[in-house]
Length: 187
Image (tube, rainbow, N blue to C red; front, side, top):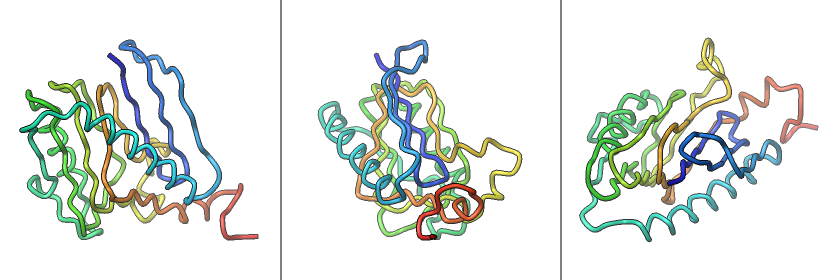
């Protein structure tokens, strides 16, 4: 068994992917910290495509689908949908059959404040199918008093797959404006 750890950060330009054993030690991994949103988007899409292939190989017919809207998500890009995502995650992670799917519908924008999803889950793995847009908060002030390096994190989750044609919008410009370092679009 391998632990899969995926972390999407608020800067929209840093993605970490690493795997390790049950003890949680991190093994092989990669980090992208510069290069702009374009490169991060390419890497996230590549990760989603690769994980989709593995998910398809492991999927079992009759898997349960947990739509975030059925758990209270609004998808207007303004309302905090984090509680609904946690409810859908808890249902998906707690399902005892097959490989459940946590579904994020197309055509809507779901605002997620900093959020952590925890395992272990009761199944072979969980698929998060993102068809809509997942938005980070519009201002870095949301992170006041909490870890500013995390937006979406998964811990102790095995067999996680993130797939779909949706997007993760980290709204990085607010962070770039505070940075003393490289700033895309400014001389």
